[in-house]
Length: 305
Image 1: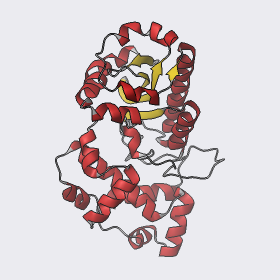
Image 2: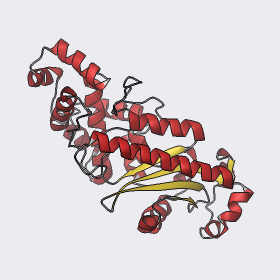
Image 3: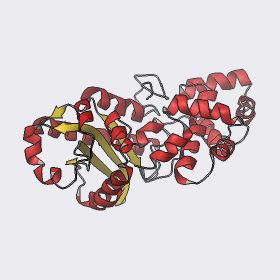
Image 4: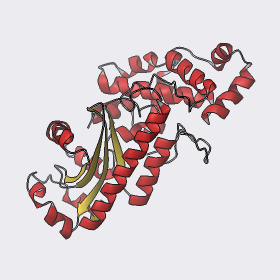
């Protein structure tokens, strides 16, 4: 699993920057030793955080799925939990179907569910187990008890502190989204709307051009012509405005598009690679595995749980 942010923008900037969501989530994870998963129903965080964060891929969650429990994961989160979210605006601490403690905070925009933040997993200490007794008896425990030592127990007091910190993370990202998508109904606005005054005109031009042409045989020269600059000045402008190279921005966008196609369509790996601008399927396969931590086929099998 990658440990570094794909958007390493300079620190100390008073304006909201594209790196903030990844940095804020990574800080929460480091402090609480938990994995954060984001269900981005609005699509507004997708361009700015690591792709693996959209799936429950901690060691414990993967161990559960390896036991054939993916359908139960989906049943718990989509069919059992999601219908309740409107009644849980402050989030909650709960026990999932596998007997693991998880924290959840929803974010709404115009009364529509935009994001859901999950943090976990941990095992309940006696004090928390007592508070969550009804939930612990609701789900049948799957046969993977030996793996539970990977999740240290959490007390009720610590669990409440983690929940409050997850609320703070969600609130911070709401403020960030409101600034990035200034004038729009963030966070429920499409990420195609790069129009914020907090982003420079050059940032907007670069991001929009990549968004429109990433699936083509896009080159630095094409962007340079669009910006009316030389290639060397364009390369410098991209790094200065966006904090990473042109090639890195392009690869990130293509990988995000590929993940969406693998998750939401029946396209083959070859079709997915070709449709997202990767001319060489072997290179796509190697890059996907290196960046995402699994092969395209393995990612598809994970589903949306």
